Length: 319
Image (cartoon, rainbow, N blue to C red; front, side):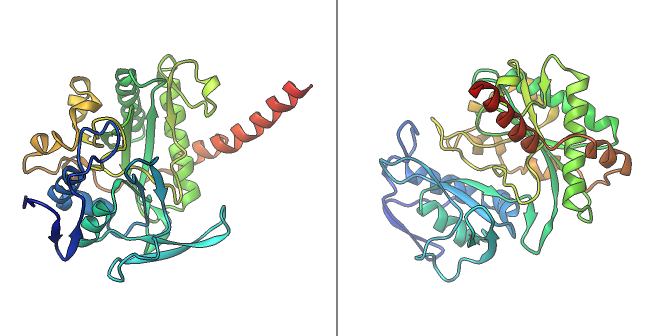
């Protein structure tokens, strides 16, 4: 890893204000961010390459914000792709972080978090992975997320599937299942719902698919709604949280022995050595059976169901 004694440049990218604190509570500087991302570039760029990217940036002394549309001052060599955003009724120009130069530019822009889509820009209608996002009820309940992850692993095995697991870098766990890229998005979404439902039935004391927080009863939310053009924090990405933790790949057998705070921009490289555990643990692409898809089609879409239920409860309160 090449160092810098002050501000300078790398790969033709000017690096500025490197010794400024990254954000309040980070216990890290902008230099720490740049050095970490550059050191893991051969691992994180394959997770970002060809995927429309949203980032979370932190300007000094300000609140963190998510950036989807690239700013006007973005260099011409940063590759972009345009999509129509239905919510904002406009075209959005997303960056594609395909190389070291682009990653360094983002790091210098104080982009801390990297959220690629689950689709590639050359196949925007095909998800590459199913994702189960395991969200425990509070920040000190990581052990609950671990237990739920093992339940999800069991649910996957029941239908002949397997996945890789990583910390979210926050309080939970992500399970990624690589899938056949010929599967239409509505079928991928149905399969994710079916797996979440199976996990809930396997261990209803720990797992719930209730989208509304007040309905979860202190259980781990098995979130199957990361579908279509949704984004998920990339493996190896830092998070805007105290200590700057990193979303870190873990072996299934090691889940019980780790905590999210074990992996930060200061410590992750020691754990990695010369390995790329995310690539090593990731299974090959897998076929989703017609039975699994059909099972999921019978399960209501969580967000839609929650929206209707929220409106019903609001009407009840008004009465």
